[in-house]
Image 1 (cartoon, rainbow, N blue to C red):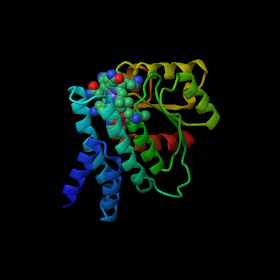
Image 2: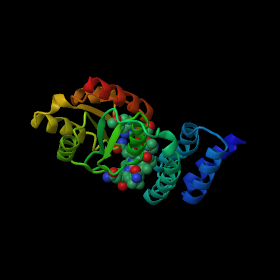
Image 3: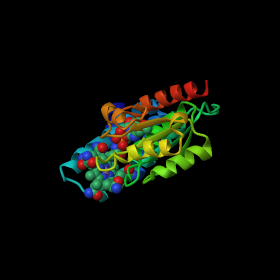
Length: 216
Ligand code: B1M
C-alpha cells in the first residue's frame, strides 16, 4: 500500500504533475512515513528515471524542467521535516552551483540536510562565479564553502574557486567542499579542495564535523 503510494509519487513526478505530487507527498507524510523514505523512494527514484530517459534522448529539456518543478513541489513539503527546528547554528556554509551550471536540485537537497544538521546555509544560487563564493564567505564569515556541479564542462570551475580563495590569502580559513554527479574523490584532491561527498546526507555530516573542527 505504502510502496504503491511511493510508486505513484515517482510516476507523477516523471509526468511533471506537480499538484498530484504535492497531494501524495502530503498523504505519505500524514500516514507517518519518514521524510527520508518519501524523498529517496518516491521523488528521487522518479528523478532517476528522468535522468536515464533524458540521457537516452527519450525525453527533452522541457520534460526535465516540469519534472524538476514537481520535484520542488514535493521537497518543499518535506523540508520542515528534514530540517530540525530551533537548533542554534554550529557554523556557516556558503553554497552555490558553480559558474555556467544551472542545476540546483542536488544543491538544494544538500542545503536542506545541512540545515538539518544545525548549520546556517547561505544560498548563492546557480551559475556562481568564483569571486562571488569568496565575497560571500567574507561577508558571512563562513567556515565552509560548498560547491556543486553537475556538468563535466563546469566541474573545472571548482578549481577556480579554490584558486580564488588562495589569491585572497583566505585558503586556510575555509573548508572547501565539492560534490555533484561528475565529481570524485580523486578530482577533489587534484584541484586542492578539502572534502568530497557523494550525496546530501554524507555531505551534511561532513560539513557539520568540519564546522565544529574549525570553531574549536
Ligand atoms: Co541536466 N544534465 N542539463 N538539466 N540534468 C544532467 C546532469 C546529465 C547527466 C543528463 C544526462 O545526459 N544523462 C547531463 C550532464 C552530462 C555531463 O556533463 N556529463 C546534463 C546536461 C547535458 C544538461 C544540458 C547541457 C542539456 C542541454 O541543454 N543540452 C543543460 C545544461 C544547463 C546548464 O546547467 N548550463 C541541462 C539542463 C537541465 C535542466 C535545466 C533541464 C534540469 C535542471 C533543473 C534544475 O536543477 N533546476 C536538468 C536536470 C534535472 C538533469 C538531470 C535529469 C537530473 C539532475 C538532478 O537534479 N538530479 C541530470 C541527470 C541525472 O543526474 N540523472 C542532468 C537529482 C539530484 C538530487 O541529484 O544533482 O546529482 P544531484 O545531487 C546529488 C549528488 O550529486 C550530491 O547530493 C545530491 C543529493 O544526494 N551533490 C553533492 C550535489 N551537489 C553536492 C555538493 C556537495 C556534496 C554532494 O558538497 C558541496
